[in-house]
Amino acid sequence: MSTNELISKCGQPNYRDEDDWGYRDFRVDIEYGVVEKVSTYSNALATPAGVRVGQSADVLNSAYGAADRIDYDDGGVEYEYLSNDGMKKIEFKVFNGVITEITCKFRD
Image (cartoon, rainbow, N blue to C red):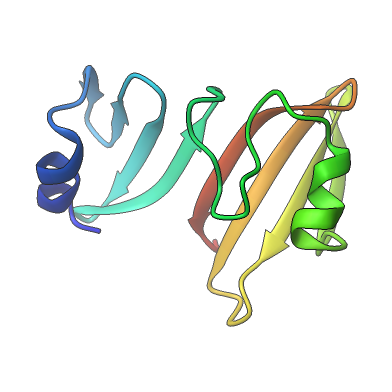
């Protein structure tokens, strides 16, 4: 979505630092006037499959199946799932078995 569509749907961001915009429950990265990435640390937002921050990582397998990629980093685990066309991905950061961050972005 464009930045104009984002503002129309969500209002002005709480903070704005060039291409990094922050809202109450999520933040977005903007590239060329388009939302490139959305991240949340809040359990106020859920993925279309109903997964939220704070849930056990056990829900990922039932919601999305086996991860396309698993990365062990900084004491946590990152589970990555790609869309069928491979153009988008959703990442779940997990610490101590609990989802701590969800990020959706165009594949880089």
